Length: 528
Image (cartoon, rainbow, N blue to C red; front, side, top):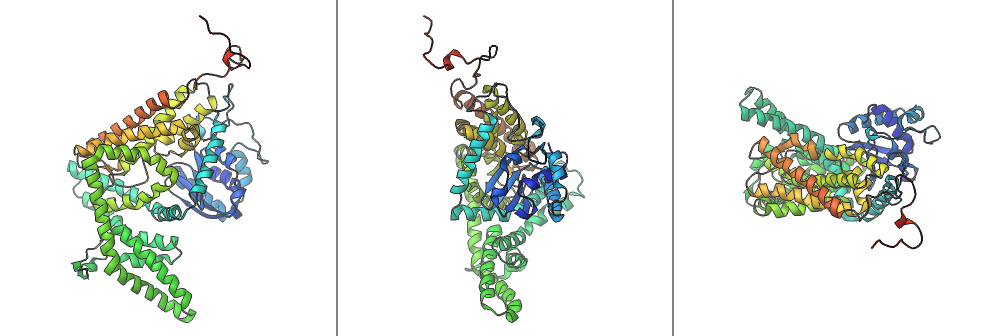
């Protein structure tokens, strides 16, 4: 657990190459996202050993340090303060913050369960060579490196850019989603009738203008002027578009939603770049903004809004049909495949879909099902903990990572335990499939479970749940899905996820000698 974000930031800064090596700083729900000038200057192993660091992930141009929800914002603020000060004092704080002296050598402090470290510095008395936490951490790092190479494709680069557009919006989505839930609860209970309209306005205002924020972030991501991107996307939600007719149909404010705003801002960025490359400086300051707003705005009104509206409507219709008609099967497939999608980087394509559903229906019905993958992961890790009871280092890793896993932060368990072991990753997918089928089955029966925001999962998703049957029923179905994912993930891993004999020590505990079956030479004859 991170108690002093400033000490943690001071410990992290020299390990990522110092202030001169950091080109950008941002954070999402759980990760500190850094742009680095020279990746080779990062000390991965020392970073993982910093108390409170749950793992490290590379995703294209950003280097991400997993710190967990709530904590990451405070550490990011402290990190930015240190960067602004040029990293002054980081050497002393580093010695205090990560248990290492100024030369980077281990000062002897052991990582315990409270450190929440993916690779704790614990030396077990009996260490199986293939299953130690250090060996699994190295294997996980190798898998991530190979995955990074596979992810360097145009499709996945585009998906990462889409994620970079929407991830900064998640805190506002969460805040507004929780306020909307409170307003709905007060309305159902008929409490504080004078306050509920104000809460409804607070929760709805951001969603009414989300297209502007999407346009702003899109232009920034694609190299345009952010305010021009927001200006072009603003036409999507302007009430006056109701007087405009496209393809014989009057437009509606908000038609096309975030998809229309995304397309409008991308178009606006290309128009802006085209103008800046051709207009002289004296005309650029006047004509470039004018042409950007005019050309891309007109095309948005007469083409993009209509087309994006049709796509958004199709997404909502498909999601409803999928769950009401084939809910159990759809949940089985979605819950079972989400962890592999995360590994391939393809889960980022779902962010605009989630946002579109929230904009249309007030919640996304896909996120609670996909969250079941994390439940299967937790169950699988618990089974590994029980089976490999003699592997002290690995059990310490699991104890440290399980609380984060329960709250939906799955990277420490994925890269530190299940993926390097191999089969537990597959049995975790089985648990996720079972939990997804459970939630999908109830959707078929009329009890739909949705989330009013994206980002959290696991137990952290409960405050954001919404559904037609009321919060209590919705929470009951979601909780049942989590328990199903835990149970099936545990049982599948316990019985099928580990090789035979995986839980036995390599030494006889009393004599500390190799078992007879492990000694070189012929095996003793079996008794008759």
